[in-house]
Image (cartoon, rainbow over all chains, first blue to last red):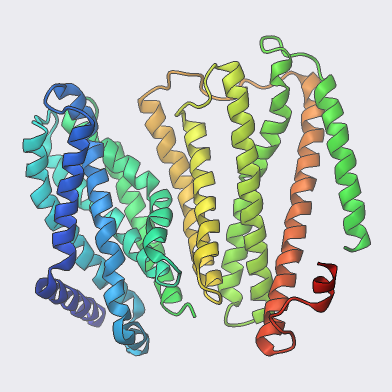
Length: 226
Length: 241
């Protein structure tokens, strides 16, 4: 159980840092809200309820994706101050524990944003889901984890590059395309009730398993990249 | 350039010319007429652009394996990974461009979000992002970062392929399913095979050339780092200017 303790220590550290500064969660929340408003300008959600139902799954995930990206960029930046990252490399704890702890912390932040954003979305866009809404309780965490696991990994990867703020979306978006497709399709299925989301939930589960394994295996290489 | 490379290059040029002759003299297609002849260039390029990513992935895995064991081999496999990624992007771009030209002429539209086109576009995007990462990353670390990204991209391609196929079977595409799935007339096969051989040889040639250039750049960078060479332009180059 020693590995779980390491993960928990990292997670607790990240949560405490966030609790004291509240940098990323405030930024994310307001950014996501702004994206929702801007998207409402792009089309009139009140006038076309059927169309709104069909596209709002995609809009919700796009807002979350952009919001998560702003926070993911900062999540490793605080580790580079005073060479904390080098201290992590010297520490006797496994490198992947650091990664899992950070990914869990990001997962909690993005989930917090979702909890606030989902009611706002429903109110602003006058959504009446026609499918089984409880399935969103499976889809949302799975989709969030799929975004966050690769996002955390590639944020660590782009620490090694110049202009990392630009680089993260350039790398993250192509890699997460299958996950984005799956979570948008599953959410649309629940909102419109026209087809079953089960296939897309399976795709998401497969994606999450494959990429969590790849990230955990390759993270020590990234941490010791120089 | 060694003699065998020159012979290979000459052979490739002859094959490309012969392939062009074959493609232009192959019998007319029943419905599309002469229009279909772009197919002899479209198909080899698209198929080959699914081969080079695997070379890229293998080279990246070898790089990560040799990184702390054998520096020389690691540098060689990194150069090979870069060369194969560039050839992937080149061939995929040609595949996309010829496909769009053909689609515009045959279907009346440049692009359709059908399963094959979407997957292919994603393949192109993945390897363009790979090249961008190489360009942006700091020297000395770009090889590791790029190798890890190459492995992720190689994992992503099959997942993309499957998920987009499921997506498009749920929502049938409004336009045609894809290329000539039903097989082609036997009289067109020789032209296709000649072109395939020609473009495979061409791909191997530019891959080798790019690899040699990258190896030379690595050796030069090493020599500069060790102090054998200065960072200044060489005197011969200055005189020539």
